[in-house]
Length: 257
Image 1 (tube, rainbow, N blue to C red):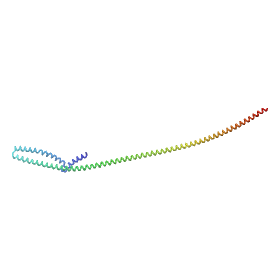
Image 2: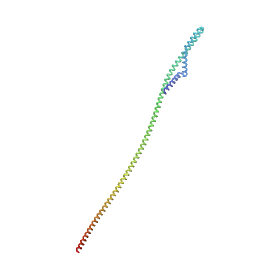
Image 3: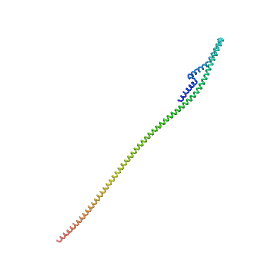
Image 4: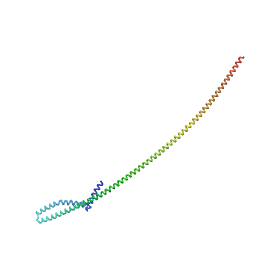
């Protein structure tokens, strides 16, 4: 649309340049056109003028004298010749001006076309340069945005890695702590078990000793009781024997009496 307007303006400029090249100003050209129309009108009117002249001459011939008729005829011939010469001169001038204008217009159009082509090429080059500049700017902007996004992503990744490392370290520390506590508890449990076993062994040993002592005491008591029983039996036997002897002695005494 812009190029069409440009070409239209160039066309107008071409016509103006052509008129200036021929030495005819646009105002003069307009005047010439008016004169041309006027001359055409005059040329169209001239036959009717001639006819009216002829009719008036005829009528004057009829009414006037031979001298006045001759004078009138001579004046008319002179007038007709002057009008024909003027018409011929105007026609020749018009033809020459038209030819010169056409040639100048052609030359100016060629020059204008060349100029407009050159201008269009320049504009195309300018547009291409601007497009390249915009593309470069857009690419640079996009690259900058990508770089910024990449940098941000890398920062976030680093942050996440740091957090993960911290969490892992904490988890490892907690695991180590738990293992240490478990080990401590196991050690304590083992110590307590060992102590309990030692105490049980001591108690068992003491109980066994007490049992042995009790058994020994029982054995001693049993032995003593057996000895006492044996002694008692012996004493009883002895007493019985003595009693028996005493009884026999008494019996014998009684019989002697």
